[in-house]
Image (cartoon, rainbow, N blue to C red; front, side, top):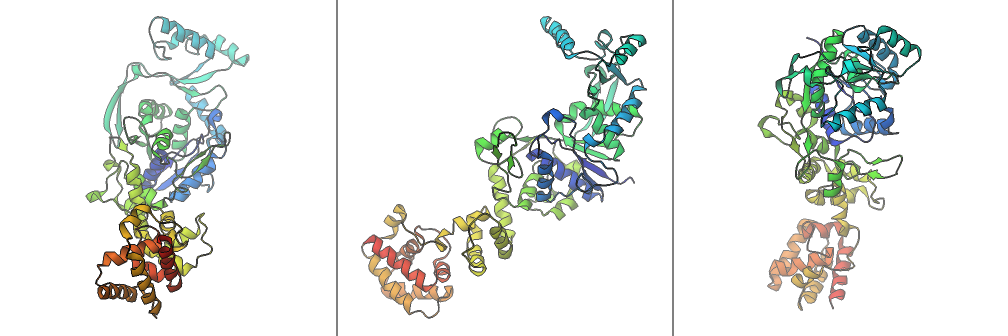
Length: 503
């Protein structure tokens, strides 16, 4: 059997979208499931839309996601170069080859001439298409004499190479995800294969590169479905075996119809890119999942399930499990709706799966100012706070009371927890706690329980105001755990501060 080879071929025209990450991930999972190879190729023939830094961004984003290519511009490989802009001599060779067949021709029409023809059609209420019905009346090597073509070439008249779409043929197409379909060639136009600067368009370049790089399966977005007929015919024209195709459905916006866009992210408050991206021209920063506190394995798990269902509808899958289970036949035909809440749920789940030590490293590598806190104390805080955390920063932000004594107290909580007797109760409790030789959570729990029982008080009468004194709100982990972590001196100081405040 031929070795499976797949490629992810983005254009460096901006940051990598969530949909692009999913395509790369499915490529990677499919290749690894079949013991094959995953190639990163940069399709940079569209020089007008090229964005500086976009290629580096794509490589860094894939690396953060753990989608590591076997071959790429950075890593190299036996089918290098992996940037289309560096493959011009290869394209020139195949341009000569296709022009010797009956599948391509030279077109000398200027943009102005084509605009004039388009306007004529619009006046009649028709739409102009450069196709098998119009090409013989336009300025190309099919309608002109050999001598005229020769003269135009000698005069260095700009031209493009167009594909000569066969007349009235039914193409039977096959897609791994969508099954069988057919298209009549009379509905397809004569696409430009090579631009007037000599560089191929996406259609021709990607077919050449896929053939040269021995790509066996092409996994790409459904926006390329209308091009499947043309691409199939290009393989036929070049007498090459075509790869198998799989077209992925769209990732849909959270509400309403249509594809997920950056505008939706801005509106609903979530990123659509894996990493922050700074526009080199405007300086505007588009937010990324990494900088928003998402863990790469949680992010990838979330992306994988946008259009694919593993066995038993299991939701939490490490990459190794995804690789074992991934099957293109189980990828959905329908679009997958993105959910911010689900993305956050995945991150919460993965934080729970991390050890305290792993989360310590993540927090130490964050931009939070934690240098004044020892590893020992931070690990204890992580242990107490991670259960409530959606993002690593939540451990710090929800546990700020461990680092800073409250300077104010939540008004609603105070009305609920504090009355005329409370100051006396807490003052006596502080004296009791002062006598404790051990400030261990288990011992403290018993001390507070015995204190309440001896005073004939319900636990709420003691615990609620004690929590308010220590935290400033009625939130946080168990009170004995907070007491132990703060230590005797700090705990008693906070109790006294609260008593003084409520006087």
